[in-house]
Length: 303
Image 1 (tube, rainbow, N blue to C red):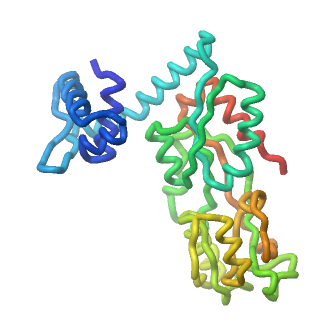
Image 2: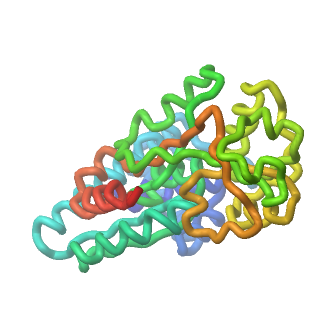
Image 3: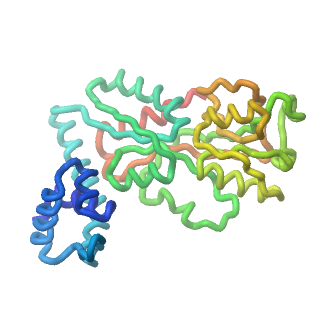
């Protein structure tokens, strides 16, 4: 019989590449990992790992088992949580991962509403940008991922359209991008600006996904932006613009919790928006605590 704890160990070994690294990730000893892997191979009736010196590779059977492990463990978690909630043993637990501007704006409102309605539900929060947050969801490291994506500007990336196909998607809001210029910039008093109006300016870019989208939009407008600085920290972007070091575009959500000192905002043409959603796995969407938290995130928009 294949046990869930053995599947978790196999997944950790596959992800980290060694027994010792898996042991560190799982918070146990290397011999314990080795013993559980031996027990799993005995249950499976076939080798799951090939050990070549310090390297460790999955056999074909191991690859198949890892491929199914996420769904199996998610289903098991869903069953445990739903049964516990129905039986009245506990209200549930939700692990939430969010991108930073969502953590400072949408998440506090959603958590306050969740605590008021379900005080026994435990909700934890860590931060990660997509696609890392979506990877964490699929790996079983969280129950909900608050994430975003931009429209495919070039229209030639099937993977972008299929990114969420296997997930439950709860729309949260459509977040418009606005331009940021120093208060001494010629366009500081303008109500709107085209991307081409800023073609000659140095740019400050955000996270890798935002950076890639910025380049695509600018190239679609006929120029390649000169990116002098790049940072995942939105206050840093605003600070760099305020110091006169360049221009930027940021989602409106990113500006709500930051004091934009020394900068002016302009509406950008063409209008560019990103889609903000709460994501979970189909099995987890049936868990009462997860469903309740999805609802609170969807209702956290005040604008």
